[in-house]
Length: 310
Image: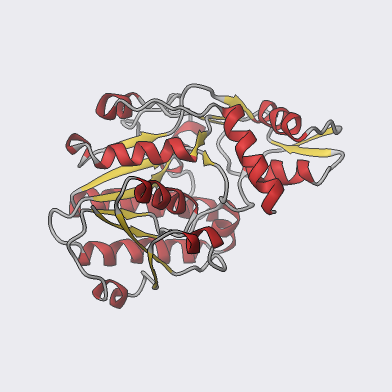
């Protein structure tokens, strides 16, 4: 197959590219590299890599058609990036997608990367059960709050692709692993543990998440794109087998790091949801997917990578 990864130089995109290449497919990555220099691992893969700004419609006009699969992963992500410039989040995430929908040809299979943040407001408001299925109402607590600009852009994206393309929408839930940057909870805990921080500040230890190792998330994506019944649907991607408290996660990271600092509790970041865990019954039904990588094994792999590369 010929596969196009838009935003393919990012965290999930790089892991997906490696998987698709291992499966024998030809992969083209398009990215603007706005988050910094190219990852050396990207240079080592036998990819066709193109540098382009997907908010410019001319970037799409320069692309050929005839793709067997297209993955739309390009977006401004990360809480710090979102809160720093919410207008950029809305502009980039919306324009890149709308230009894609103007360019894509009927029938070209599209995967759109969405997020559990789409329904997070409903959890906080007590309207949404946890574990959470795809059928819950979607709530934005405050359209003026910078943090929710990301969720708003993805809500718009879900509606746009379901009405404008032959698409699967995958809502990611706390995917983690090597190469995901420094602004997410498991890498951040890992880096601070590796540095020997003591006392060790623990933010939001009372909250809980269901973490999904990146290899499992990629497996779910590949399976969904091979399942005709998944198209036209929103499907949750994650690991519902081990919802974990943030305090317990920190204890695991510190144990893996061989550290035993004094824990200093601190409040969770403003606007973060208290609990998140997907119901992945639909993903199982459609694809037979089951998570393979336990949280302990995934944390060990992630910590080892950050200790070596940070």
